[in-house]
Length: 482
Image (cartoon, rainbow, N blue to C red):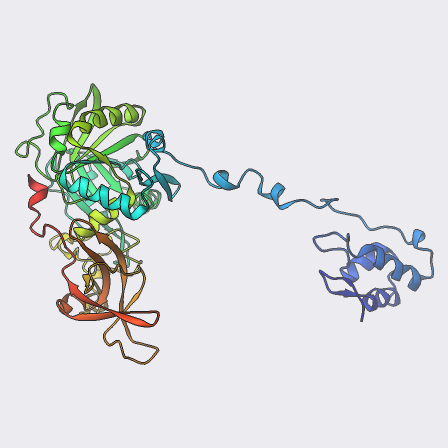
């Protein structure tokens, strides 16, 4: 058997059979056998096929004729197919207003969704570990500045805005006062956590909703879907404002000292602007929404200004903060600081099968609302089972040993393979503040295992870990309220 067309597995025997079946036109022979009909349009097969057909027909090859070639007539490179969609042009690149400032200071960047985000700011040849430890300690002891502009932002406006929020989120919103903020947790109909973020009530009929960076489009689509198909009677408008606001997070014990001289006549004392509140005003003459919120566990403010003024206000805050030892920090430090406080990251502590209670946020679920997205599912016995994966903290016996994220947890290190896994590590870092490695994990029946020793099997050994409260730092939250 001699193959003629290697793409369509056509043999010389097939061409001869076509002639015996009565096909005389080379175009008919082509279609009967499928020779020359593959992606190369006969570039590798037609000459041989014509020769075999010529012999079978008893006609000179030049009398047999040629098949019709379809484009492309010559090979096309993969580069031509890709076009401009390569390297930094493969996806649109979104940059914040302070992007250039971070690049000028040698920041190492990472991709988060389509955004470029500064991961850490090395000084004098520091590796990531050294830079992150320095950034963490500086933020805890003095003040840090962080670009949070990539957070998703949605304006929920209208007479029925509070009713809409009540139906979408597990929390209650009707009684939230104007000028106050609340942590919002969003579930899908299956009762599993979908997204989260801080929500501020700007007015009786207006909410400033923040989402995770990667979840912004999905949350807006979900909201629009429910508004248009389930509750079209509600008088509400939804607008994506993610690109409209630059968000500058100023975090640390000296945060108020840095911002107080810059805000125009706005009282930002603890009494006037307590934790989880917001105010509208101006900073250096620029309109501002100021949120007293923290993802670090320290005294914190998030300055929201129109993006066209973002770089200027960043520069003003930086100039005011330098005398106080202000340090820029990136996403890696942000993750360490939030993990020290036991704050979850949706998509890291959650995997699409975690309920609010699983990740320690059962307190956020309203006990009095008649309905909200996911309420019916959360009542299912399977979603309230005591052996579900639950968020816990882990401490290694060796303070310097940092666990690998994603590693499994077992009860007995000597158990035969395949071992019965109890859960997995979701976040793991070295805490310079505590002088100890820390980790968050999802463990079966985790809250009932406090104080137990579990094991993390790694190559050739098992690492013992103690199950602890997921809040490692300032458990009472005193540093938030100064």
